[in-house]
Image 1 (cartoon, rainbow, N blue to C red):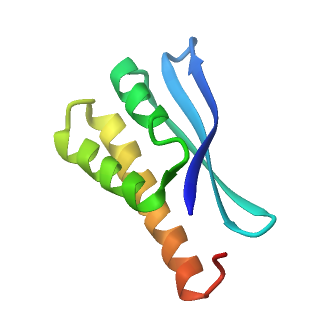
Image 2: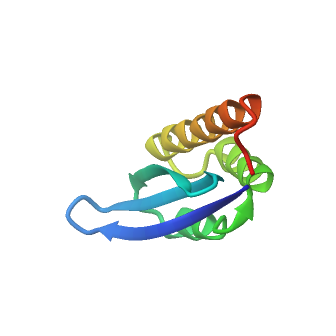
Length: 100
């Protein structure tokens, strides 16, 4: 299972970064997540580097970014929500043997 970043946008009006993240867990089916936080070029690069990485590495890296706590409260909250979402999706599909 890999994480794919299908879209990245810098929203100039609100000065936010927005990523559309997908997980292809079930054959012919994809799960989407929208990650949005106050724009930060360093964090943006860290997130972009997660593209097509195995989920285990992605979760470890997100956990590391949360622990670093260098990107502000709102970004930290969004990263925690992403990590929790990834964990729930993985558990749901693994527990139901839906992965390929």
